Length: 397
Image 1 (cartoon, rainbow, N blue to C red):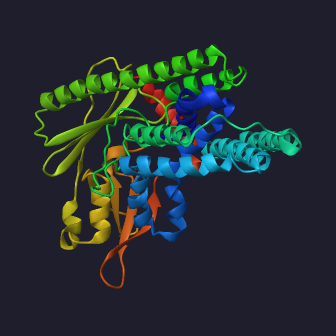
Image 2: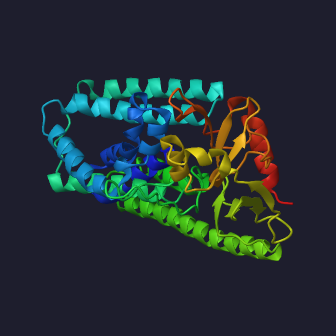
Image 3: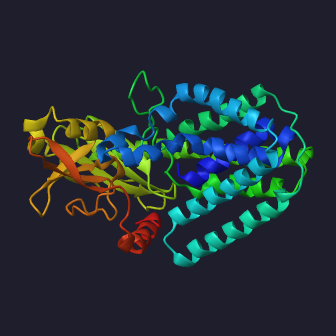
């Protein structure tokens, strides 16, 4: 899921775990704990594009890391609060929390006025932290090492569980297995899951830590978000039935299939099936007048890479896409590997620029394929057009 959602979930889980003892500090450290697994992206400057693709949502998103990370970070924070520099640490910590929120907002939008607004609000909050903690002594916390380790376990553990509900896939069993768990039931960013958590987190900050209303509000938000998550699984089941019926009505002999929601919603779904030589795909909205998926076909073209079936780059991209990939010739004469799980922006599977996840590959001097062009998100100059088209399709046909 997106960074803002992981921050909100981590903060909510931490409030449940330790909020009664430490109040709003639980929100802060929960946000940190919910962010920790995604810090694997800090390794990107030291990795190739291919290595970064395989490393993300790897060991830091595993069950093992949830345990070991909880032991380590719980120990660190427990001892931080025992130092004489408690004031300074508190101010820096809250400033870092605000910075994460501002950076997330800036990352999620390219609207300049919103980005400038985030920077201004961040500056005001950091200055407020400075004034608040400059001369004010802070009381010690009535917490134990086990308390902090419990907080970090639940905030880290819930992060990969949430990620595994998306299409990207999460390596929960690293380092013992590189299998990517992906339930494909919710978009990587879905406001209906995130907003209840954010509203509750803002609301509880106005109540003292001992107030019972904090627990009522945060648990209500968690229940609402969890019920919505359950609804996404039900929606997926409904779409699966409609897609299978559509395939059978067209007498398509498919080997396997998958469905996944489009970005920012759980109404419009991308449907993909695999035959021996083709991918069959289409879109379905719950607002469509017919319970039927209009199907399109695209050749796999795996034979274009047949001579390089032992190639590391090709095999890694095949593993990443769970073998749902297509190969096409680009206009420049090169080859492009498209991850079919994410589909296209506009339903045009003949345009090399329309695929959401695509990788241009070319041979190096040793005859091995290397990635020279990677697209893993909407181009900045097409975002408005893409989202307008998405909204129109959500409304149904």
